[in-house]
Length: 103
Image (cartoon, rainbow, N blue to C red; front, side, top):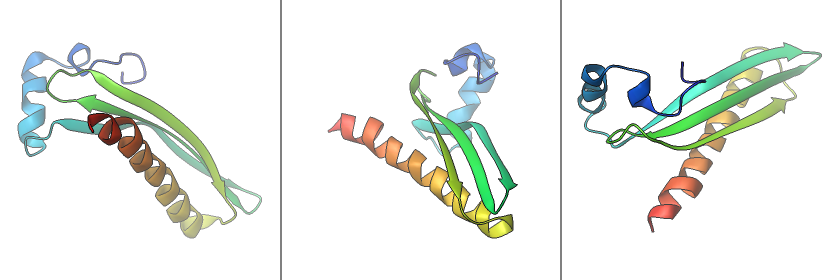
């Protein structure tokens, strides 16, 4: 459902939406992985991700960004490198598209 609609309030009931903030320690923002996948082939691990940052006060989408990445390792080590890279890009985007806009 997250792939189809940019507003959390359209995806879940009002009652469930009201439970989000208390369950996330009164957070104002929620970073959600919409797509996160990996595969290995020929000595490489390939991955793709798409993240959305939501305002938990309004349910509005703040930004969405995706990334495709590969590393020259396979197996568990390749998955760890790839996961760190994809999450690192999400953190970078959070700083660039949200924190820097607040200044």
